[in-house]
Image (cartoon, helix red, strand yellow):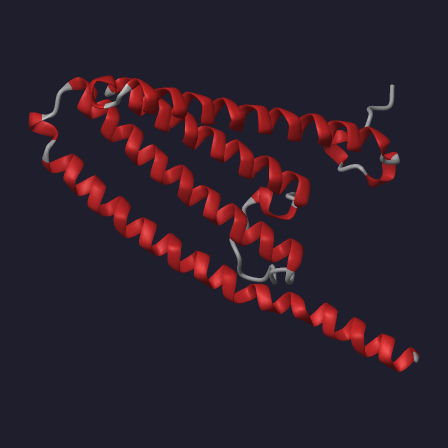
Length: 180
């Protein structure tokens, strides 16, 4: 019976590698997002001479929006792979500082913060171009943004409550109580 248990555990443990193609797919989506960013940037630059102030602001917000989505994809790729599949080898990598410090709770916070920022940019773009939107669409954009904000607040409160219940040695160094 012990051999069956060990085999089952081995299979379950190795199944984490099934996530690797998902991360490869996210790399492809990042490449596609980059192509879209370049198209938007070229369009923005070539039309800057006829753009109004609000068009410039909307163009910049659109580019910032794409950058935030790209950042979100990178965070999910690196943190997800490190947390659920395997550690990256450190030799020869210019490793971002956050990479080794983002656990699942941190990944969740970064994810929802990015979603809230993207939602805020979409809402700001709608308000900057208010004539192109009907009241119902603006209403829904605002409600969706408030829901995202509420979700972020609920996740932060839940993480704070969970963190208070952990013994000090399990908490990340940045959240441990300071010794006086």
